[in-house]
Amino acid sequence: MATRPAEKSAAQKARLAAQQSSEPQSRREILDAAARLLRTQGYRATTLRDIAEAVGIKAGSIYYHFNSKDEIVAAVMNDGVDRVYEAVTAALRELPSTSSQRERLVAAITAHLSALLEHSDYTSAGLKSYHDAPDTVRAAARQHRRRYEAVWSQLIGEITASRSGPDKVSPETLRRAALGMMNWSPEWYRTGRYSINTLANEFAAILLR
Amino acid sequence: MATRPAEKSAAQKARLAAQQSSEPQSRREILDAAARLLRTQGYRATTLRDIAEAVGIKAGSIYYHFNSKDEIVAAVMNDGVDRVYEAVTAALRELPSTSSQRERLVAAITAHLSALLEHSDYTSAGLKSYHDAPDTVRAAARQHRRRYEAVWSQLIGEITASRSGPDKVSPETLRRAALGMMNWSPEWYRTGRYSINTLANEFAAILLR
DNA sequence: CCTACCGATCGGTAGG
DNA sequence: CCTACCGATCGGTAGG
View 1: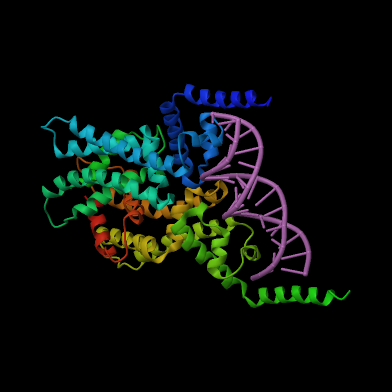
View 2: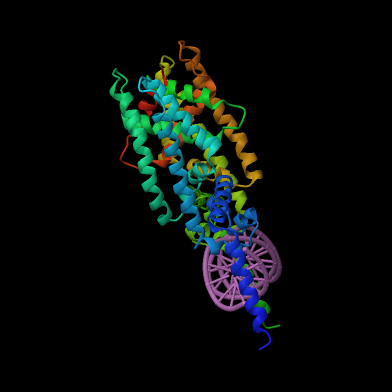
């Protein structure tokens, strides 16, 4: 069997290449590329071949790191929610305890908009891909979303509790309005043409009444 | 040539069926089905086979009425914008000339939300499919969008012009916030669980300050 | 409006 | 991590 040595060498080379590539890093590179593509192209238009090309490997090699396209999408989506969650809770945590309700709201809006518009492909990718993803992926993402929504329910609850007047708006609607105006911003926002700080202050002014 | 008569008969039957089907109606049926599917599944997931099946014809027969998938999508998207435009301008037109700014705003929001959430698959389909559609389709839709946005610029302009105070919000941001909270509503709205009238009043209360 | 079909592309797999 | 490949599906076309 003259061919055996050659065959074995090929398999060895493959295993070697795989080991040399320090897996966790490749995994992250794939997720980064997927997030960027999902953000701009959406779930259906983003192919495994696109992702592979973006990280300089072949399409089939994706399966060395992940078991399916949806495993990648799920990871991006869950990460995306967790990133805004971390950004917003961190921003609130860093505020002095003497800070006003308005300051808390502005800080939260700034953190959310920054993640969505500038810092995290993951967050905007998740927002864009959610409805096109299969049920199993969505179900997993929903858990992360609920935790994040609770932060806003808390924040908005503080606001509505301290207000009164003829024009009462339910906390639920106020939270949905807040998330609506923020999450719709990728539709019109263009980098450089608007200041996120100014936007956050204006959004807060609209919500605080 | 014994087969000639049979062949000719098949062609005749086809032409006959086409003529019997009173084209304009079939065209509208196809667009209705496409709008409904595009609304729920989006641009990529909606196939010509889906649309054909929904109206009870074969996939290839779509091309008897349209030249391409994108021609259908463009028609749905443009119609969708025109429908909200008509709904909102009609609602404003029917208001008595003595109506207040708040009444005008509530009427416009009600009309927009009704079209988006209840009356028009076309409008929500356009909103959902816009970013996945090819450039040529988007370019056409943009013209319709601009005309509709002008209605809101006018309405919001009236509001900001009559207000003053330390918390001034630019008309642009206020318009974007208004359209944002409205256009995000398909994300959480479920028929029957919310009253569009109540929502419209709450949204108006948030925007009027 | 139907039948039959084409080229392109996609997610995924086998074997090394 | 690569090569080579598969079955499924898609938009679109030819001919009647």
